[in-house]
Length: 561
Image (cartoon, rainbow, N blue to C red; front, side):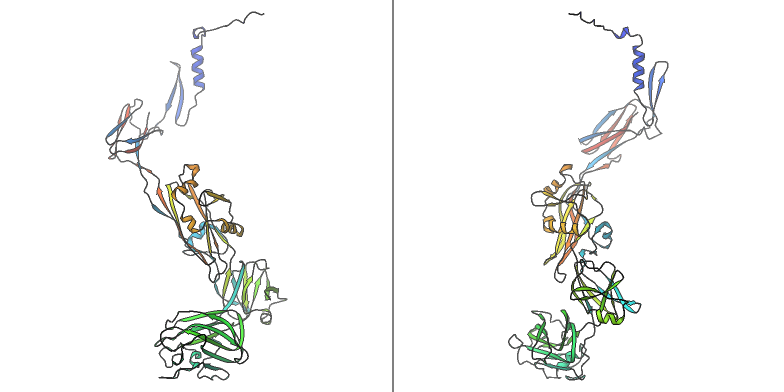
């Protein structure tokens, strides 16, 4: 076996330049920060570290000491390096408990709110957020025609011209003007004769006698024994809507239940065009207007009244007005003109003329399926006449997505949310929440479920409509459940956003609207800067002392040499 290796040891005294080398090593490892300079004192070989300070502001660095549960009148002393300039600063902050059960308005959805969201095309902001379901348009002069741009990018579209003049001229007797004949089941004769024609004289008859058509008191109308009011025309005329005007004074017995009917065989057979049951409007002078499902053409029309309002034995009606479309229209899109035949767009060949509008145009559209057609915005309706039309627009599901997150760092917790919304019939309002605008969540009663990302298009709207929370479900989320949404931040809110979906299938009866969203929150604690009367600060050459006047949690900060 070989000999063991020799072990060599040395003490620091054996190394002649040990101290110098060590000092050099330490000096080389130092780097001056902002406001700090390093220098070498040749006389003693030491490294000098200097910090600059402007008068009255200290060196800019603070030591902050947390004092939880400091008591009233307690002195808190901190030693500092000896100094004589007193060019240093100190301050104190006291924790103030946040207020509880505070109402925070997220949005009231006025017109200015629209700028804060990305939404699909059929969303309206006007003190509430609702899906667009149609509007009224007046056609304006457009070259040799009249036109108006309309919204037509939904699922279905109906267009109905509105008219204000009855097809029946003002009648002066039951048989005048010539060709028009008014008749009824009977009529009353008292201070005046309340003939059937009075309901077709074009006046509301306020202050005149006779002021309405009125039956006598022989019987009350019923299904088995109705009253009726009839008008015969010189030829068949198209009707799209009708209006009833209630009597304005005295005995009010305006119709309550009735059928609006048409006949083309002199009353031999009657087709029921519209029916109303239990309309309780017996208000003086009230006007009730109704639109038929489609334009009809008959030579005779009548009201078949099976029940009346009021306690008087008379059935009364001031006016019966019949309205028809006043002109045909065609559709313009992508530099092309279209008529509609059997529910299908048909391109109109060649240059548009007035004759072609009369040939290819329609009086109205009823639930025309616009999706998947050649129609793309902008879409106009074009007519020879200055029409006023009302559209009924059935939108796809709509979505409202916030552009930015809302800071929640000022809150200690969310206690509850209150989404004020209206859903009637098949109308739907749905909501989801997010902390990053990328991943959206709904509460299922036990946990927060991710429904993934959402986009401001029909795909995103459909997804949220199918998977989102109802307003009632959102409003039922408790403070503890809200805390679970912020599990990664110890149940303390940091950021939040809300997305909304709106859906209707029948604008005539469906309602889907959001009026307001508020949160009930507990505000987080804040730190109030203390005045000299609240915390007394004294400087000595080698210490700084804080005297807290009242009990509480404090942050004591001071600069030091």
